[in-house]
Image 1 (tube, rainbow, N blue to C red):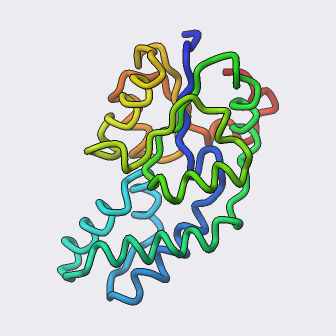
Image 2 (cartoon, rainbow, N blue to C red):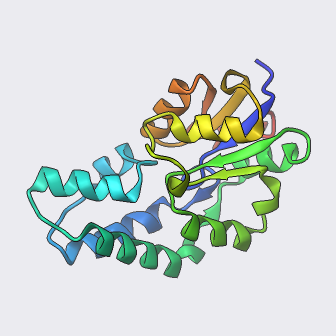
Length: 195
């Protein structure tokens, strides 16, 4: 399928920020008595911060102030955003297709965190639409973020190619009807700029 639009996840797809996010989760959750192991963190990649806190609180039977945890986690993420580095094979795809195909970001991150990071990388203008956790009712693995991105681009979701790194995001993009590329398959490929 020759895509008519490209939709990218952000964390773990365009930028290698997952180690930083995991450290911020550990720091934030340790203050309220919640734990978050690495395997679960990876499996829940792309899930909104609010939903992660709800799941952990329910599973561990610990009542927490969800808003305070979200605020603390986002503050840590903003403070350590400089630790995230571009994932060059995926950035090369976006760079090669900016201005040639409509492109969007569909992320589980909040706009207040994602926007400044896009600006710092100098790539915000590459994207015709940016869908964050603030723009949808249901986050990944629900397809809403990807469906909303396709809608904003004016392209049928089945004509879009999505780039994702996390199981929840891959599931969401597939449920939206998109062709999905697991970015792990691109990391060692010399021909990554092909859409």
